[in-house]
Amino acid sequence: MSPLTDEGRKDVFIIDDSLFDRSRSKKVELLARVFDHCSMRYRSGFRMLTLGWSDGNSFVPASHCLLSAAEDKNLLCGGKACDGRSLAGRRRLQARRKATDVMVELVHSARCAGITARYVLFDSWFSAPKTMVSLKNQEHLDTIAMVKKSKTKYLYKGEKLNVKEIYSRNKKRRGRSRYLLSVPVMVEKDGESIPAKFVYVRNKSKRKDWLVIISTDTELSGEEIIRVYGKRWDIEVFFKACKSYLNLVKEYRGIFKRIFA
Image (cartoon, rainbow, N blue to C red):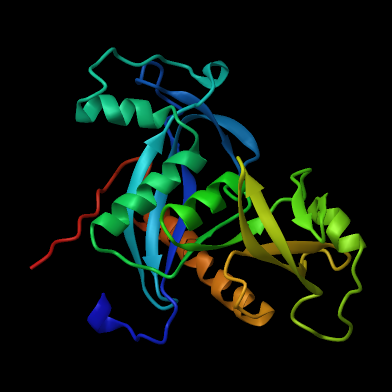
């Protein structure tokens, strides 16, 4: 893809998952109860965790894996006993791990294959402090992601506060600005900490509500963080195309391979 893109474009890794529906199956190995965010109900199947590369104009799927349930209460069928050193054994062990841990492995494998990017984009389901610290310190990649309005604490002006408390303590920008607030914070996990920036934006679906985007690249402006995060939508288009035109998860499953000359 390097000859087909421009060096001025910010190329990114995008990570997201989609339901691999196996509702008719009863005895599929490692079959699990998976929550479907479209229908807002649990279904039988797997989570198809996908890593893609994009420059904003083109999207290329780079790697993927099927995830079962990390907790035994959501597991419907057990797995076969096998040697954990074999490829089949490693895949079975990987399927039972948390998605936030597996996504770091997918990024590492893509970089080992020679695929490069400047940022890693994902939504609020994967935006754990441990994930962002691992990507920054281990893979030397910055993160731009949506953040949940949860009780997770971030270091702000010497205090540990959540995103709601930080928002309430600052004055918002007036007028038609693209964002409401931009503040520096520190992300901490297991004794490690990295600097980051929160950008609060208006929620177009609810005018009185707001959303939070975090960037571990503190040199970017608020407008640039919003612009780069907008590239994450490419993977949603990819999932839609696979399911609508390729009958993915029901009649057809394809494995994409990159062939080097």
